[in-house]
Length: 282
Ligand SMILES: C[S@@+](CC[C@H](N)C(=O)[O-])C[C@H]1O[C@@H](n2cnc3c(N)ncnc32)[C@H](O)[C@@H]1O
Image 1 (cartoon, rainbow, N blue to C red):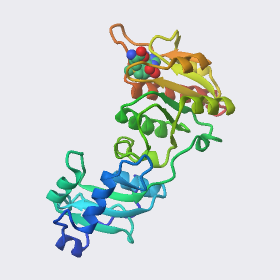
Image 2: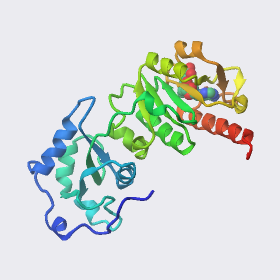
Image 3: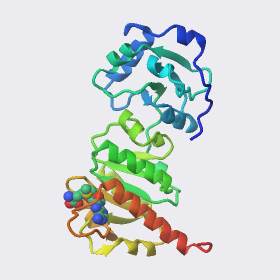
Image 4: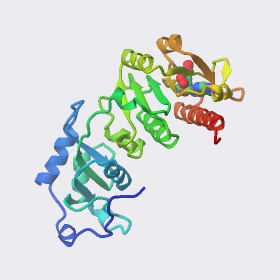
């Protein structure tokens, strides 16, 4: 993925002056952002050059980039942002102290949080909508965001996930920064059901024990909302009651279910393939 600008070397003043104290103002700023537990943080942390590049490609303005001293000596360390951004070199022990037990990478950025995605951001698209009905593992939500982006979905609606923001550090990492470009909306079940009904989006649930095998999704020509259930309990009763279609992905005996992100990828692909075959040029 193209970064906005990638100078290969950090400027000389950075090499000379690594931040060696957690009391340095630039280090304190990181500590403040990490400590903030607000559901609507003003400033967010973006780990890794790839995710920083994805954020800038999506129009996010990066405020500052921090590189740890071990990364700065690595020839592969690049700075994926334009000038006008503050660059800091952090001594490794300062980075370790700031992040404590939290995982951290050798390059990260601070940026002003974008506006939270809303259900209205999913209007007017022809792509499918992926609804995660109680999925709580951030790694799964991120992987589904990435797959949904790759397969042309309109976005992802996340219900009862425990997340307070979709610009959560872990979700940014797990989605490879695609949460900045694909709408990932936190909503309640009632808001989500109301939106799908108003927009006249047909609802298809996915469960391992549904009767219709997934290939039948190929004959659904309209965009659909694909409802995937939680890792533990599956699709909620409320969405099962609202479903226009209920599909299962056939599995070999002895396997109880697929990982939810794998099921999402297979279903999105199958529906897109059916729509493509039905299009005049397909
Ligand atoms: C790990 S599974 C949940 C298993 C859960 N014990 C249950 O009762 O459904 C998570 C979600 O992935 C989707 N899924 C997993 N395997 C599937 C399959 N073979 N066919 C359709 N969907 C599947 C469903 O949406 C399911 O709710």
